[in-house]
Figure 1 (tube, one colour):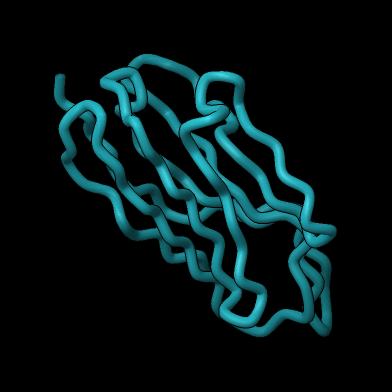
Figure 2: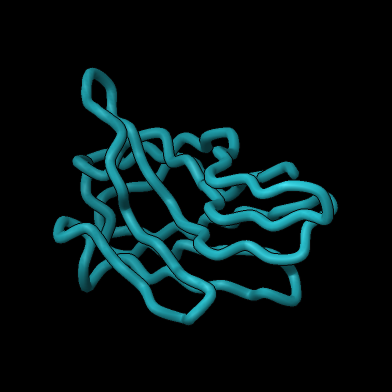
Length: 120
């Protein structure tokens, strides 16, 4: 399994970015996909998740500004980030949890990060 994240970049405060994360490889299903982020000197924190049952969760700090979506036909999860603030600056990591393959079960898998920088 591989997770390829993209869409990060530099944006001014108030701007928008859309992150994408594509899961590739041989698997039957993924239960949860989502995003964490890690700012310099801080712990990695959950940003948003999307389950196979179409339920979503958001960190309080991003509610009303970020929207997570998932396209199971493309094995892709998206994070639409609006009204960005300098405090949103971080490396954003996608993850997949509960991956069923033909031969094994993978409880958790990280993708590589994508840098998001919001200037004031």
